[in-house]
Length: 385
Image (cartoon, rainbow, N blue to C red; front, side):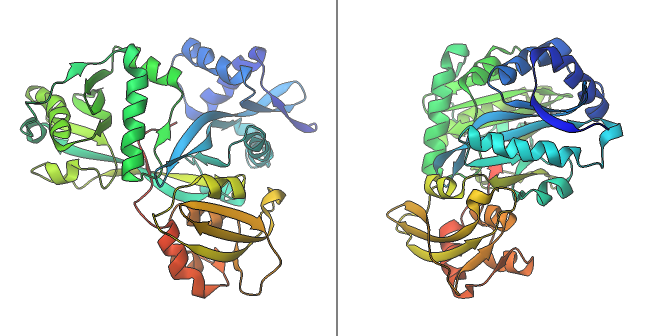
């Protein structure tokens, strides 16, 4: 190898990225459609590559997401398409590239970054830790068909309803104090609504998007602001029970469907786990939601080798739903965390769990307060990226 260097991928290099992608993920997908999508990342400098001389040997891209955390929207860089040519694996190429990905997320103003890991070793080494899952539950279609809601008007949705979809999802996640779901760019919502393979229906306070999947039906997202709307939308999906016996649904472990359906979901629920990392600790903690009435005063000592701006002695204050992380004098009673422990705490992992895993030390008397402030519903995503 000559000296490796990280670059912004250009349009002319996309064919090389595709070739590395095929060697990494296997054949599949539409090359022209992929390149069309990738051009958006090129234009905004959100796709990075590693060069060995004139050869592109690795690449990664960053989605411009927002993510819900306890009912508040936090900008998040979604890292995807991380590929390294087979002959360059195990040589530190992935780490080299991901360090620049972290820097680019900081430059773009994303206080958080998240990803679905193909391997945990690389990402944990760089400060990522498990934060939540993408849950796929399976229900009997005939069971859903009988849920009712016949008095609720439901109509077919189109591309002009993209803003309404975003509005309804935002309202629901704010009310439920959701943690984890993504807010996609409006252009992506429009693309899904244009796709003839997707079936989208809209009610006054909710919507559903679903599709066929190997003879079954698969629900990508269902948002409902009331019981009647939830029943009507799930029954709309279940109306395909004469053909499909099973409905697969991506939803939260606490979604109301688990309480409405007569029969419980099948026992083989699938979970894809995703990882989180704080890029800008003060901004991430300030943007996150917290339980109403929560109060906290705690000293932290953060050691972040990859992002030194997070490293140091801090004081975290929380009152009236607003958190501030400010530089502070060293404290013997500080809670000590690295980036993995900080990410896991942010996502609601109990301090007792973090201590057993050696991801948190010191300040044991603060554990009940930290648990009350950061704990809550299970973080989840509905989408894979």
